[in-house]
Amino acid sequence: MSTPGGVVAGLLGSAASEAAGFAAGVAIGPTMRPVVQFLENEAWKAQPDRPPTIYTVVQGVAQGQIAEAPAREWAHEQGFNDAVFDALKAAANSGPAFGELLNAYRRGLLDQGGFQTGLNRLAIEPQWWTALRGLARTHLSPAEAANARQQQFITRDQQLQTAGLYGVVPADAEVQFELAGLPPGVETGLEMWRRGIIGQAEFAQIVAEGHTKTKYTAELEQLRRQLLSAALAVRAHLKGHIDAAEMHNRGAEWGYSPADMDLWYQAEGRPATTHQIHIGYARGSDVQGLSEQEAIKQAVAQSDVRPEYGPVLYAGRYTLPTPFVMRTLTQSGVWSEAKAAQRLKEAGWIPADADEAAAAWAGGGAGPSADPHLQKADSQVWTTLHKAYLGSVVDAATVAQGFQLLGIQTAARQPILDRWTFERELERKRLTPAQVKKALGESVLNPATGATWTQNDALAYLIELGYSTADARTFLEI
Image (tube, rainbow, N blue to C red; front, side):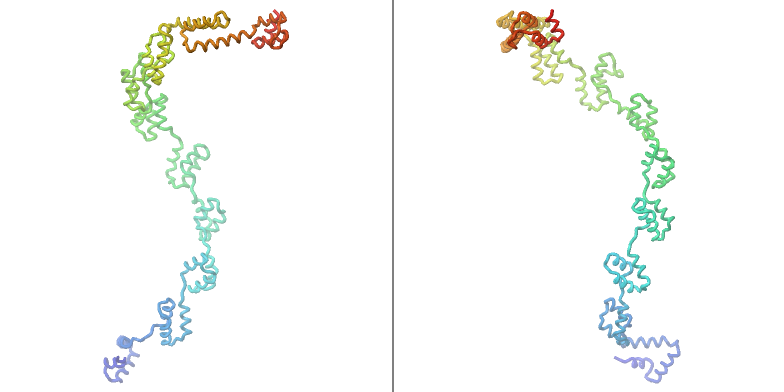
């Protein structure tokens, strides 16, 4: 490799004296600087061994981008010893930005010493350290403090103090407090106004403090008056309380057209029932000149019943006689057993029950026994027969003949006679009031006491029979 001197000689001549003279001219001639720079560039290009500056080297070592051994060698080539290198290296070490440093301190990731080391790295003088440590606490924002006071979590003084930390003056902090939170809604405000809880001024304040534009306050105030519903207007017209025009006006307040209200009116009322229509036609009336069947069909269409059930309702328009009337008609022979059974089924009876009831009514004794006069005679015979047997006027054989005459079923005859016999025995064992009075006068023994009847015995017996005390005494003294 050629030396720098050889390069210069090749360019400007071989005479050393000429080169020296030229170099001396450079020192006193600024206009020759471009030529000298060219020579300098060529020399360094021919021999590129100039080291980087000491400041670049220590910065690269501090950032971990340059190995320390060659960096120290380059420092030595520039005349810097290791002590200087170490000092410059320490000065080149940096820390995190202030924001990250403060967050690490807040979270306890750095102690106070570490925080101050970081401030040193940022070239912040110690006189500022105490103030910067005070930034570790994060306060509520002015808006948050205003809302906290509005919700009564902090006092007014606390809110103003917090706002002052951000440079907000007390007057502005009060405005923030007024802006915090929302008033009752417009509908709630209207309800409060209606009930007299607040007045018009308070309602206007509610609108102003809300999110509704105040230019609409006058219109909102008109909503104070409650409107009856459109449905109520339809029903009021249906019941004759208001006319159609009033119904239309009230419907318009809710946005309904007159046609809508008329249709609502048509759908609202209910028609008469099929039975009511039938009764009306039977009594000579009609519905708009329609026949009874047409009127019932229209009523079904205007009700909630589907049209296909119209014939069923039409068939059920009549009212059937009560079962008592049906029995009378059957027992009197006006109705046959089959007709009675059919009518009972039409009234909703279980078919088997209807057949059995009709058969009983129709058979009620055999043939002519259904005549009401005969029934009356049977009742009289029954009463006389019973009384005669109790009085021992007739015997059991006569009673049996009477049972046969009355058509009493064979299986029931003996149980009835047994009961009558038991009843007769009870009557025989009981003295009549007259017998008691007679026994008292004849000194007859009282079976209950075993002694002769006394006045008190007789009184007690008569009272047991239902006499009052006064009536019993009167009866015994007569």
